[in-house]
Structure formats: C-alpha cells, structure tokens
Length: 321
Image (cartoon, rainbow, N blue to C red; front, side, top):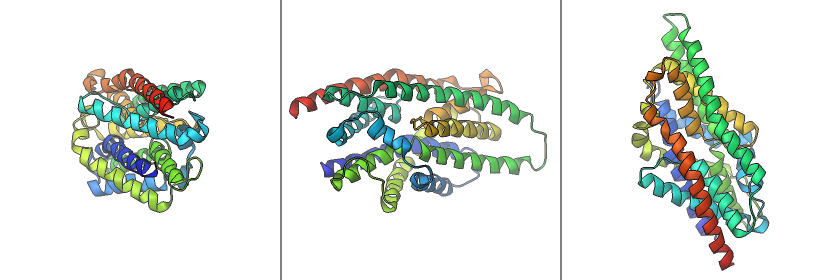
C-alpha cells in the first residue's frame, strides 16, 4: 500500500502541475517582465514555504473534515484520489474541461459513501458553495479593479509601476495557491507519508519532501505550459498590463478568502473569473467568452462524474474487504 500511495502521490502532483501550475505560469508570462525560470522559481518557492506560512487547514479538509473514515481514512484518500486522477486524465484526453479540485472532492465523497462511511454532507455543501462563490467574487472584484485601473493618471512612471504591480500580483497568486488550492497536493503527500511510517492520519511533509513535491509539480507545469497558454490563460482577454494585474489581485483575494475558512477553492477557476471581470470592465466584447465556458463545463461534468465513479469504486472496495 505504501508503494502504491507513493506512486499515486507522484502522479497526482505531476497532474496538478500540468493543470494548475501551467495555468499560473501562463498568466505570469503574459507580460514577459520575468523569464520562465524566474516565474517558475517564484511559484515553487511559494509552494515550498506554504505549509510553514499558512499551515495545513485546507489539506485537513480533504483528509479529515470531508470524510471521517477512521482507520479506513488512507484507503478513502487512496481510492478517491485515484478516481479523480483517472477521471481528469480521461476527460482531458477527450478534450473535456476539468477541475482537479472538483474531481478530488467528488472522488473522496463518492468513495466514502460507497464504502459505508458517507461524507459530512453539510461540510461538502459548504465547501462546494464557497468554491462556487469564489470565482464570482473574483470576477466582480476584477471588474471593479479594472474600472479603477482605467482611471489611473497618465505618467512616465506608470509602465514601470505596472510591471512591478504585475510581478507582485503573480507572487500573490502563487502564495494564495500554496495557502489553498495547492494543499490538495500536501494532503495526498502527507497521507502517503503517514502510510509509509504506519502513522495515523496525514503527516506534515518535511522540507526535503516539499522540495521533491515542488520539482515534480514544476515538471508537470513545464510540460503542459504550451498547451495551457493556448487556452483561457493565453486567449481570454487582450494582454493589457492593468487587466492582468486586476485579475491577479482579484483571484488571489478570492483564494486567500477560501483559505481563511479552510475551504479549497480552485485557483484556475478564480483566475479565469478574474480575467473575465477585468476584461469586461473595458466592454463585454473584449472578453473571448469561448475560453470562459470551460469553468461551467467542469462543474456540470467533473463533479457529478467523480461522485458517481467514486461511489462505484467504494462499493467494489466494500465488497472486497
């Protein structure tokens, strides 16, 4: 079981990098203030420092608050994350937009229900409600910040200040990801560590393990960067500096808010909503809406599918135990 968990954790972190990491890198590189290696270094430094800076409250939501499975907790996590990983890969191969966070939530809840240890439905409802509201908040805030940015006075110093603001906003997004959405990786890695050491529950990853996690995440992000840059991150709105800054601040604020509640919020969806809001502040026709529809599609398809497949998987495991 320990070897299986280690392999699953490695694959899961790689997929998170290919999905979340590549989207964040594509946003950070839109204005080209920093080269790829510098943007990647900022993101990985945030991930490594995340548990020390922000704790593991969101990670514990995945492992403890959502499904109280007791001794079966590691099995629920193993099966639930396995379902999520398989589903994301299949849907991505078919070209269907997905969300790793929604897949994990659905997979854990479905497997728990199938095994006879149903999730705390009230907690799941709260998590999903906050996860749905966060992009709306990010979009609204992005719109307001976009309007405010357009009123900035013209100055010879404005381009330099805007470049600094873009770099700062990206750093804020990276830290927000480490505080919230990225903690699904810490949850899986922490449970894998617990299984390897025969210790109950999720264990806090060591610095060495966090560095290894960051490297696997980076590999996935770099491999998928070109594909992600052609999607919403690269084509949702024209690459205007103040639009990107407004979207970055808005999405980081929304995701940090979820972290304060211990609720996982998708950084990719929040960033997309922030771009929509900031772009809409210049006019609705400025937004390429075909790149925004995948956010809704992920909710309509990924979450129900993960719940259903997870439930069937839980039934199979229950019959085998």
